[in-house]
Length: 112
Image 1 (cartoon, one colour):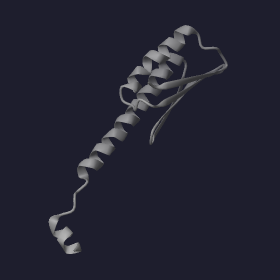
Image 2 (cartoon, helix red, strand yellow; image 1 turned 90 degrees about the horizontal axis):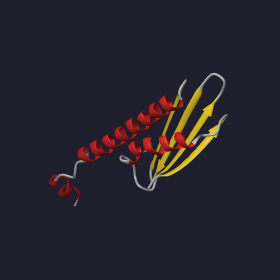
Image 3 (cartoon, one colour; image 1 turned 180 degrees about the horizontal axis):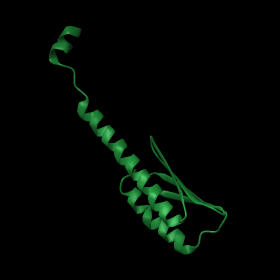
Image 4 (cartoon, helix red, strand yellow; image 1 turned 180 degrees about the vertical axis):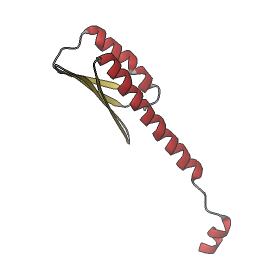
């Protein structure tokens, strides 16, 4: 299970927001290693609201930021960015594995 740390600045997160965060993070949990840590920082100023998400798993780090008028909209945007990063990273790993060529028999004999 992913460990979630929630930090707020400029306001206190109510139960509804905390529930929404945990529900929305389920989308990340489907794509990430079980032993991961998610740090979420929510900031509210007079003019903007921002969401910063950092996900750390063994050998992997992902970060996303979103700013705007709605904490919920920013949360959706940042989570979408994290998922895109995870999927892109997985694609790179699969491509690297598929493109790895084992040594040819002629190369093995030549080295002997």
